[in-house]
Length: 145
Image (tube, rainbow, N blue to C red; front, side, top):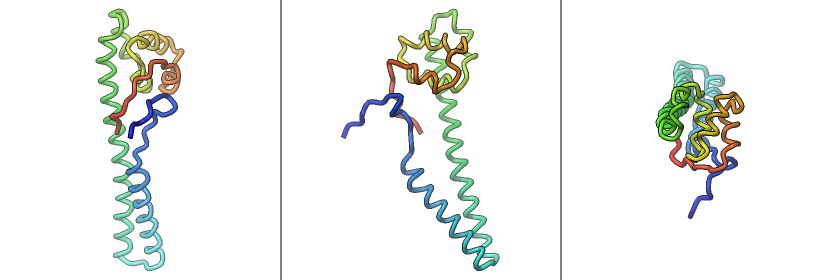
């Protein structure tokens, strides 16, 4: 089975196992623990509720940590790529690009990167979504977390 080509319309990543399997289990456990603690208050039910809340925190924090690491890798990858693709006059301005702009730029082909970067630096393209909408030579990113 082949996957369709990635584009602006189809590039979003939705970790199915994480959100369609793990999330419902975590929320069901929390709901069951809440109901149990309400109906039969005890040290044991309070402990189970506390563990369920901790599990919810682990679920949320794990995703935030993955996204943070992914953003750091994208920032590093794009800064290196821009050093190779941009004219030397723009090298000092690479640090002026926001993380969201770099995330959007990663989908652009090398040929259109300089023009998109200049539009970002002039303020014409402020965020990642604005940049992604302007990409014409879409480079898929299939290795996302």
